[in-house]
Amino acid sequence: MLTTARRLLAEGRALDASTLLDQLGDEAERRMVTEIAVEAAPETGVSAAECVRELRRLELEGRLQDLRRQLAAPQQGAEDALLREKIEIARQIAGL
Image (cartoon, rainbow, N blue to C red; front, side, top):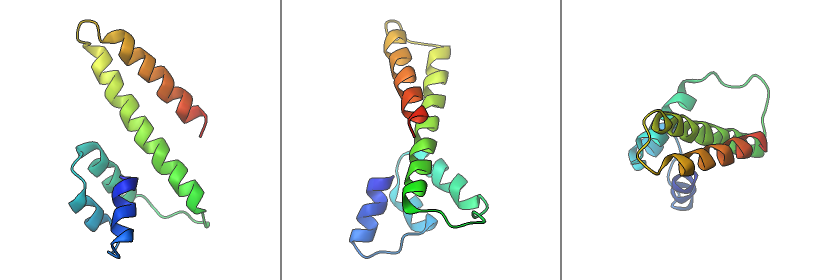
């Protein structure tokens, strides 16, 4: 999603939810943009770094939800890899 947003900016195009949604193919990313677009604006100013950190956190939490669903009915031999990825993502979220 961030790559797509950067590309749109580099092309000089407007960066709004509608334009970003048109460019995203991944359903999870489209859902995240929609959720962010309908959230209330922060009452105080936030830095660009805080925005990026929040977007990253939302992306990681979405992946964590996907992993939980996959772990509920894992394919044979895939459970260990899913658990390792889940732990790594949890570590990344904690480090934000």
